[in-house]
Amino acid sequence: MKLWSGFLLVLVCIGPLVETGCGTHPATATITACPGAAITGTLNDSLTGQPVAKGSVALENVAPSPLQDTTMFSVASQAVAGENGSFSLCASTVTPSSLLVATALDISGNAYPAYLAPISSAKNIGKILMGGCMLTCGLDNQQQTSLPATIQGQVTTQPKAESVQIAALYPTAPLDGSKGLWLITLPDLADTQTSTVVTSSNGCTAGSTPCASYRFELPSQNAMIALSGGARQLAGVPGYLIYASASSCTPSLRLTALQQDGKTPLLANPGATLNAATLSLQQCQ
Image 1: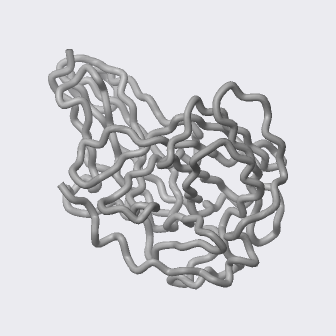
Image 2: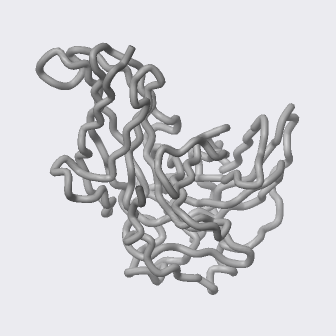
C-alpha cells in the first residue's frame, strides 16, 4: 500500500538560510554522563536567536512498519528543553538511520515547523534554530511560525477495553535518498509524550463498545529537514496519519490519513481542527 505520493511536492532548497539557522553551528552545550549515546544541544528562535523553552526533542529509531514501501520511526528517547533551550537525550543505541526530531511553540503560542535531522552517533549538536528562516520563508508566503492545527478522534476496541498507543505520523521522502516513504512520529505540541489512551464502555460514545478519545496539536507547516550548509522544506501544508496500536488485538494496529467523511485527507492548515476517522481495533484478547 502506497500513501500520499501527491503530498511530496517540489523540494525547495533554501540557500539563504545558511546565514539564519540551517547550517552547522558551534556547540553550546556539554554532553552529560550517559550509559548509552548522549545527544545534546539547544533550541533557539531563528529570527531572534532567543532560547526556545519547553520544546520537545526526540531520538527516533526504525520500527516495524505495517505498510508496503514505508519505514516507520518510533521514539527511543525524548526530553523537554529547559528555559534556556538546552536539551539532553540519552539513548541505549543510535543507528545509522536514527533521526532527531524537534517540535516547539513560540512565545505567542504559534508552532515552528518540525525540525528533522539524521543522526548516527552520540553528539553535541549545538544550536538548532527553530523556524529556519527570517520573516517570510518563501514557500506559499509561509511565516516563521503559524497557528498549530488540531487533530482529534476516537479509537475503539472490541470486545473489551484495552490500553492503546496513539501517535501522529508525519510522512516525508526518505532523508537518506532511499525509495519509499518515511513515517515519522511527531511529538504533540500540547503534551510532549506519545499518548496512551485506555478505552472504556463510557469512554466517548453511546453504547457498550469500549472507546477513548485523543487530541493532538501539530505543526501546520512542513518540516525543516537539515542538510549540510542549508535546509529543505516541502511546499504546502503537512498531511498527517494517526496510528493506533494494541498488541492484544488482531490486527494489532490501525492507521488513518482521512477525516470522518472517509475521503478528506488530514491536511493541517493553520488553526484548523480536524476530526479523524475512527480507528477500530478488534479481536482484542
